[in-house]
Image (cartoon, rainbow, N blue to C red; front, top):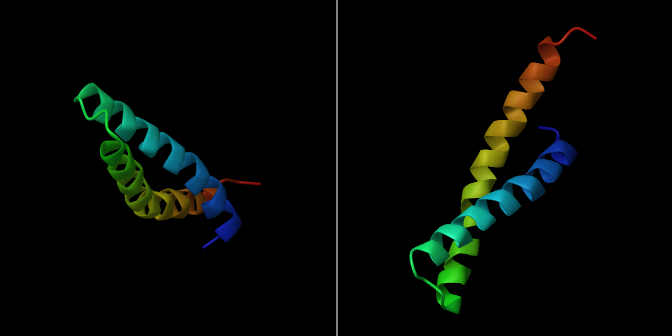
Length: 67
């Protein structure tokens, strides 16, 4: 696995997932700090497998693209 690509993707995926979960939590009325912390923690946990999947798919795509 290309760790530099994975690290860059993780930064993007984490921000998007955490932001989406925080927005959803606020829309559902969880305006306290516990709701925000849970949203960020869940975003972190979910972003790890998503990053792995996307990194592998990108590497497969790069292998098959003619240079």
